Amino acid sequence: MKRAIIPLLILLSVWTAADGQVYWQTVLDTVEMNNASLAARRKLADAQALEARTGNSLENPTISYDRMWGTPAALGVSGELNVTQSFDFPTVYANRAKLAALRAKQYGYEYAAYRQQVLLSARELCINLIALRKQEALLARIRDDARQTAELFRKRAAAGDATVLEENKVEFEVLAAQNAYDLNQIELQTAEKQLANLNGGKPITLLDKDFPPREVLPPFEELYARYEEADPTLLAMAVEKDAAERDVKLSRSLSLPKLELGYRREFSTGEKFNGITMGMSIPMFGNRNNVKRAQAQSAYAQVQLQSGRIDLRTRLEQLYQQAQLLAASLTQYEKMASTQTAVEMLNKAVAEGQISVVDYYAELAPIYTTLRTLIEVERDLHLTYARIHMLEL
Image (cartoon, rainbow, N blue to C red; front, side, top):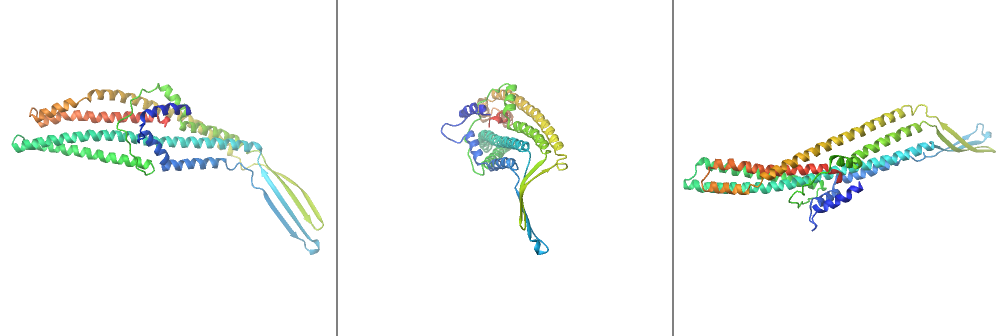
């Protein structure tokens, strides 16, 4: 994973402002620092790692003391002191230690996967914000054009050169354009609030005005090999499989007898005895199904890992194909988007009365639809890029 970080930082430096303004990579860094659920998950991973290491110490020693009085009293007093310590076979402690280390590693990978999801959500919000601001500029332009056309037809109607139907048509277009602009503003404010929520409730302003440069994807097999080597979700599954196999060994070692060693002291009137005690607990009943349980868990973890690899490949293939299709579609829309001259010609034609208002909007509508679709396709392409490169977050 470290090998992937250095080229990523080089790439990110192209997309991050040199003047210290809050561009999208800075947003991700800020979200990682302030996100409440990420901080809680980090503490949970630490707690789980500590929990995995507990339970591998010696059991507490047992101390007992008995004191007895004889009847008749002439028999005197007798007593007994016992200090005992029980412990498992050394293989049990070794297997527990290795299992704890594997569990700690697994929890670390699970945290890394959760972190990726949080940062991917932030990255997707940045992309959506850029798209919504582009839509905002376009919709403002559409609204202003509609207002200018409406003002033109109001003057014509006052001079008797326009019909009521034409005046109503342009007023309707102004209303529709304003409504589209207002709805986009609501979506923009919602996205900004969602980004603030990811940032621990602290408002943050994204200054990016355009999408990052389009990229050339690496060959698919190369991309998949990177994921197979460094994807934290897949690594967590692999470690879980190893942990399950170690649990089988631990369960078998728990079938060995548990030993007990201690000191014993007896005393009575005029007599004292000191010695040692030794014992053995034979696990005939308590561990009966534990090995079978561990073996079943190990088989499940193996299947889960295989399924995880298949799911990962399928997901990457879908994203890879989607990116290729969107890139091709974006190229086509970019060729169609050089429409400023056409809009100016239409505005001139309707102003000079060369075309009717119905024909004007019939010609104008597909132009603006193309421009809006261009923004949406570019947004979807960069959302797909973000998901493909989630490994690098």
